[in-house]
Amino acid sequence: MTPHQMYLSAVLDKPLIDVTGAVLGKVHDLAITPDEEFPIVSQILVRRKGSTFAVAWEKVVLFNPSVISVRSSVKELQGYRETGGDIHVRRDILDKQIVDVNGAKVVRVNDLKLGRHKEALCLLAVDVGFRGLLRRMGYERLWGMVQKEIPAREISWEFVGHLEANAARLTLTMAREQISDMHPADLAHIISRVPRPNLHNVLNSLDDETAGEAIHELDPDLRSRVMTELDSERASDILEEMSPDEAADVLGDLSAEKAEELLGLMEPEDAEEIQELLEHEEDSVGGIMNNSFIAIPLDLTVAEALAEVKIQASEVDTVYYAYVLDPDERPLGVVSLKELILHDGFLPVEDIMTANLKTVSIDDEPKEVLEIIAKYNLVAVPVLDEEEKMVGIVTVDDILERFLPLDLKLKRHPGY
Image (cartoon, rainbow, N blue to C red):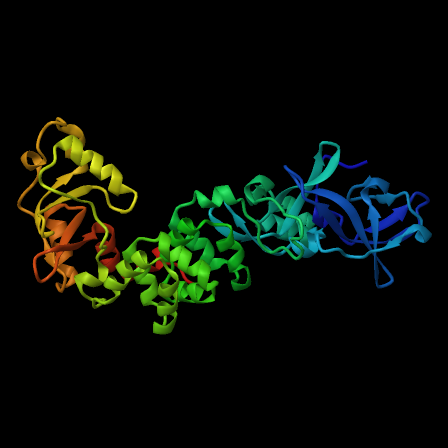
C-alpha cells in the first residue's frame, strides 16, 4: 500500500524487505518513466553488498516511510543494467538545478514529492525551499517546530517541465511553451544563472527570435561567451532574427574574426545592414542607431500610408512613427501611428504630418539624443548623414539604456 503523498527523502536508504521480513538491501534510487502529466515510478533500485539491483514496481507490496516491502527474494533480485533512456530521481534530479518557469528563476531541488496518480506512484512536485533541506537532514523535531514559520516552496511538476526519453543525468528541464512566453529580461536572468554545461539546454529550447532577445539582455561579457560557444550556424540564425542595432551590439562584443565569420553565414541583406552599423564609432549616434524604420513618400493619403505601415511593420521594431521622405531620402516630416488611425483615410498625409522634425547627425554624441528625447517627449529621433539623408533612428529605450545608472544596469543585465 502506498500513501497518497510522501517525500523522496523519507524512503531513500531505507531497508527493503521481502514478504517474510528478510532485508534485501537499501532503497538507493527510483527509476521513472516520462508520462504526459507526471513521471511514473517504474523500478526501485536497491543497493546490496556494493551492487545495484532493480525491482519492478509491479512487485511492490508496501511503499511508505515506515515499511517498504516487495514480492521478491534475494535469489530473485535482478542485477541492474542501465539503458540509455533511464532516468533516476536521486541521481538525475535531486540536488540539481532546474528552471522554475512560473517564477522565472533557477532553483535547486532539495526534495521531491511522490504521490499516487491514476493508480501509479508519480513524481508530483519538487521542493526548492528550506523545508526540504531540514527534512533531508533528519531534523524532524526542528521541522515540527518551524514548519509553520517557514513557507513551503514546492513547485508542481507542470511548472518545471516534462522529462524526455534518453535524458539520463538530467540537470535542467523546462516547459518550452512557457519559457518562450517570458520577458527577455527574465530569460536573461535565468540564462545568467544556469551552469555553463547546461546553457545549451536552455538556448535549444528557444526559437531563434526569443533566444536573440534574451541574449541581447545579457551582460556584454556573458553574451560574448554565449555567442562564441554556440554553433556558428545557430549563432548566425539568431543574429538574423535580431534587429540590426541589437545584432551589431552583440557582434561588437566579439573578436573581429568571429564577427566576420558570423556575418559571412548570414543572409547578405541582413549582414549588410549590420555591417553599416558596425562601421560607426561606438560612442557616436551612428553606433547606437537602428537603421530599420518606416519610411513613406509624401504623395499618399492617410489610408494608403496606413496600409504601407502595415507592410513595413514586420521588418522594423519601432512602429510609433512613419517618416515622410523625399525621393532623395531626406526627411520632410513625420506622422505617428495614432494620427494615421484617428484621421480620415482620404486626407493627404501632408496635411497631418509634423514638418518641423527634431533630428541628430550620425556623428553626434548620444547625450544630444537624450536631451531631445527628454525635452520633446519623443519615442525616437531621426538620424541624418552628412548629406542630410535619413539613415536611421535612435529609440528612447536604446538611449536610456546607455545612460542608466550602473546599479540599474547590473539589475537589468545580470552576469555570473
